[in-house]
Image (cartoon, rainbow, N blue to C red; front, side):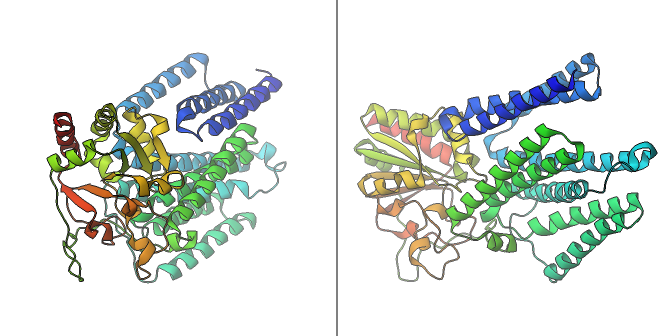
Length: 464
């Protein structure tokens, strides 16, 4: 295949990447945006295989068929609750692939006597290995935390910072040693091992409350590793796609930090939030207690309301109640009730988790509103249903200066006329901070599995 044609396909693929990324800005066009970007990557992969003469056409078709089948099965079988850890795994394997390709290219160039003298020393291969292995091991820990295979609490140990400083020095030394004639294989193995350990030490102290930020950051690192590998291979489409992923990941990381009113360095320090195993108290020191309610009482409130806002959280994903929630909204709308959804930027365990979850249940895109768009509407709302959310509606973020979440932008749920919490228990959210909204006089607690509770609400609302 002519070199000019290859570069033309690469350019067209890059245009598809940018167009797909642009369409990801809205839930309405996100699905087609994803398909456009996937088409761009498919064309880039096929063009690369032809250019490098790596596989025969038959082998290409076989590889595409096998990979497509695996992808289709995963897309169908993976539950929405498992989507955050799946994204973390994809980030990790992307970083590992970049590191392996860069290492292979280094070995190929150095061991090839014919071209070794023509290739100037470059830092890009070592950057790719470093960032790729940090991404791989960090994503592995994120996967284990998000999937519940290890504790979601911060894991800290004495002397962490001295270890990180020493590790950083050794990483730099292993790269410098290569340029001063050190044993190539030994230096590469040392660099990869140190970077692997470094990634683990970075993510271990991160608690569950900060996981949306870490997932976005690891996504950015996987893109940067790919871009560095693109420079190693002189592959323009890999440079462009890696840069797009890296830049968008960094922007998303910053957006998540703003949504939590926290600095990035504070998140990387770790030690905040996790899997709280303690039940929250049902009474505050000032004597206020929670007020429980029943499905039939809640159904009456909903049926006679003019406006209802539903606030989804990770508990909704765990209960797999998104289809029941959409059905409840449909029933209320048939009664003339205005129903909207308020989605906080860090609701769930990865950016956009709630949007994807609700889209799976065919919730209309124009019913989904971000925090800044809908916060002013809570004052005129009759009933707010909070399903599985916690920290993102906690008024302590506004009033309690001693709270770890003070200053975090929240949904103004407490300003509604009535609030109904659907929860299994009084357990606090990922931050471990008790939710003061539970004890407000306009709040009612509806305990039980969210899916069962919403199903009962549907039955009761129909009967009103």
